[in-house]
Each structure stands twice: as structure tokens, then as C-alpha cells.
Image (cartoon, rainbow, N blue to C red; front, side, top):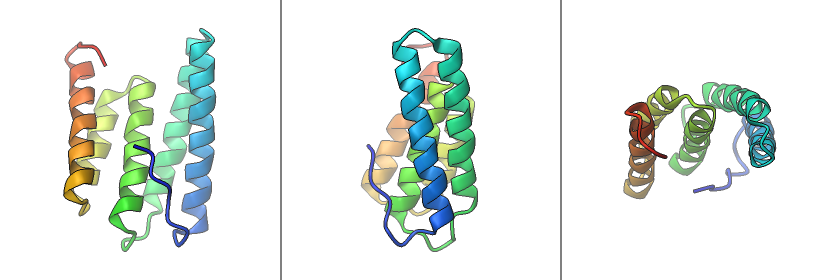
Length: 122
């Protein structure tokens, strides 16, 4: 899932989210090149930026936009080896008025995080 953010969201949120996605993409490239330590460092920075974007979300932001940010942040947490953080983000998202389909996607992501916590494969 990678829904686009609504044009009506605050500029600060959009800027942080865009920068986080850029860092996450760079982390994937580094990982594919075998540069795991650098990839994890970038993934952690992406996660910090995405959680900052979540922290400045206005209360009235729509479910799809809120879901996009939480899903991205939880995915970034998994990418940098922080499944517990992913679960926390997912739980916050699930409590924020998502649609049934969005909730199902977030629960699937939570299952992946729990598999990692329990020592299973992604």
C-alpha cells in the first residue's frame, strides 16, 4: 500500500513525509547493494522523519491520509529492525478511525511485525 497524501494536508506534514520516503528509497538501494549498516541508519532517519510527520498531524486529517503516514512509518520501523515500534504505530493507527479495508491492511502489517518479534520470517 502506498496511497498518496491529500493535497489539503499541512505543508510541514507533506514535507516530512516526502523526505522520509526519499530516505527510505535510498535505504532500499543501499540494502540491495549490500550496505546494510548504512541502509539501517537511513531507515532509522526515515522513521524519525515519518513519526515527526505523524506528531504534527491535525486532528481532523482524513483516514486515508492518516493511514498512509502510519503505514509508511510502521513499514520503516520494520525495515530498520524495530518491530515493537511498528506495532505501537499500528495500534495508534487502528485507534484513529480507519476504514475496514485500511484496518485490515494495518492488521496484516501488525502480523508481520509480530512474526519478527517472535523470531519468524518477514
